[in-house]
Length: 311
Image (cartoon, rainbow, N blue to C red; front, side):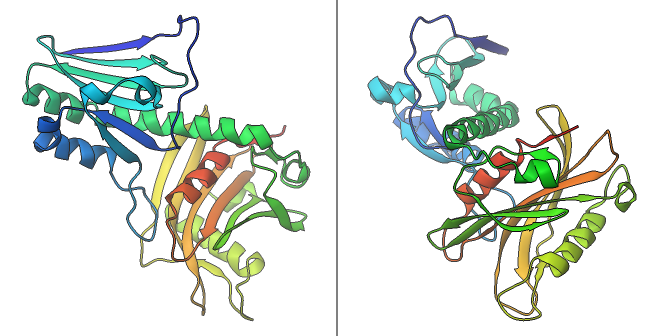
């Protein structure tokens, strides 16, 4: 089996890729779509987005037959194309028909070859699409980016976020930004922690302890004596990740308000300021009852990924 990666960026003109964020086009003949190959592909592309109260898929996918794959359908930003061929090959093309675009071409003589390729390369496909969509989201945000310096002045960090986010709390070492949505709010908070607050390899229990103490002190609920805490009935996801050459300790889970019926998903990123030795925390959380939350959390995650520390 052959793995091939190519960048087709020498075309004189490429149209802007089309489609909503987190959409994936799957080009496959009807027979394969109704077989195990179609089922496996749908399960891979439609895998669950982590850290939400109800299951929602990472991506919304669309089935296109090879005969339908022409015109505007070629301009989709993310395409997985299954092509019957005597040559068995898995190829990845960047900006093949439009820009930006990821085009995964899976060629094979039968369904068994297709199944092997999609299973062997599922992490590559999904992570590549996630990273590409994150960059596209940030690109769109930059069209109307906030010029506020509040995070830089108070916390010593920079974030790329839209002008619609407004400051709702500003203290010496705590900033809270909020965006109003149709049925709730999207929120970003940031603060610093002393070096000794966490070990060099923070543990989940310590991060939960700190965020709950911050919630009690600075994030009140609607009723007197209520405040934000981490919902522990739903064990948070915890990772050490690298984003744009930054090492980040990331926690995804659910928050709730102690002694009240409010809650939602959160994503908490912690990284170290190598110059001061302090820990920098930036967290996003959504309050959006009774509606889908995937796109809201994707927006917050994309914003948080742009963090840079002022030295």
